[in-house]
Length: 365
Image 1: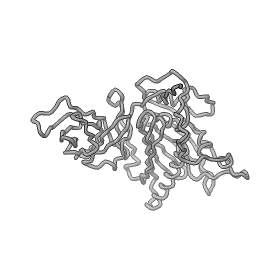
Image 2: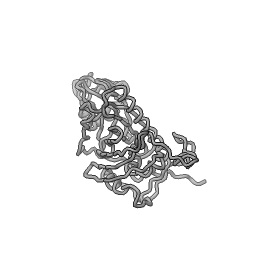
Image 3: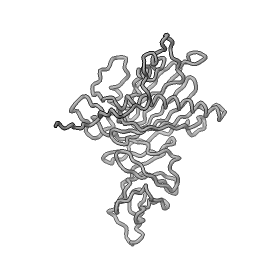
Image 4: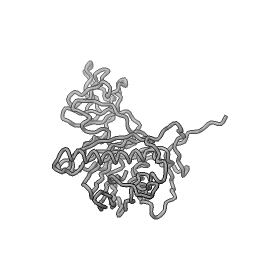
């Protein structure tokens, strides 16, 4: 009997960068919380001064999980098993039944910062310190925008594979049933940041409106997307690798305040629902597609290879070059989250040739 050999799903592992491990309101002062990202058990905690921290989950004494029963004493993390305390740098600061601390007992502490409603932890496989910080979005804190509205999803796909959608304008027509394809006017990258500017015609009951979708990728895990034309909308996207093959994506949506809380909420709900619908339409493709090292691109495709070249800087471990096609696992029992679009007329028009109506602007996801 021949043995079926499992293969690595992607040629790369997990990138270096800042990644969201929680939303700020989800971690209260004095609280500990279990998390799992970067293929690692983590403990999140917030000290009495309100500062958020990310640590390895297990106490070096006898392995108890800080996120399950642990607590915070001032600015120290306390083990639930024997009460050992550790400071923000992970040093053992107190053992309640000993006059001495244990210098060998150290908990790995991840650089952590809060921006734009998220708690971000820095991941580097060799524990090198961060060389940039997440940019703060002033529009969120100055009161001009209302929100956020939240959505989140866990998808069986590598974070890079998901992020490539940002430069794939053509898929909006054929996956999301938009009337027109967004036009990418500019794509450029400098260091850890990549910017893209695009235009889009938005059908409305009052006629076509010229709009824009402009985005900034602040490293591999943070994106700020601005929509304008119908109403100014801001999307803060945070994608985090759970492991090399699985990604959690959180969306926080904001709309420019229109002076009416009920109207702000209604518009925000509609926008979040549309982007959430489009994300679910992408999920079956992401989870079942192969990664092609050398895709058969044409001139009218988006700047895929520019994007990949920029993204490659975030890998410090070796990227596999042993093959050019990396297929997903064979999982026939896995159902698509959203029903397939059964016919071409359902996707591109009705049986009598009518053009489908676009309800809201697409998001570059």
